[in-house]
Image 1 (cartoon, rainbow, N blue to C red):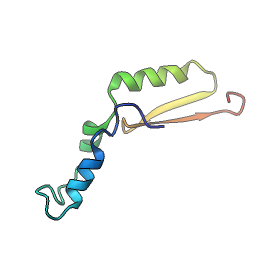
Image 2: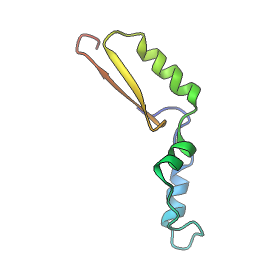
Image 3: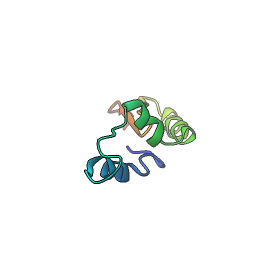
Length: 77
């Protein structure tokens, strides 16, 4: 699930690096730069993870700071 505050401005960046007439054309970011720039604020990540941690059988972890990946047993759902 996407986290609030993550990916703000990513579409504009994609447009810039994909437009041959733009000064940033072809200036792609590394995965670390993308995470630094577009990750949800750490407090948002922590709150969402804490919410799911209260349920037995549910395990969640951040995916690059922009999304959360959760798994759950059938009993937990």
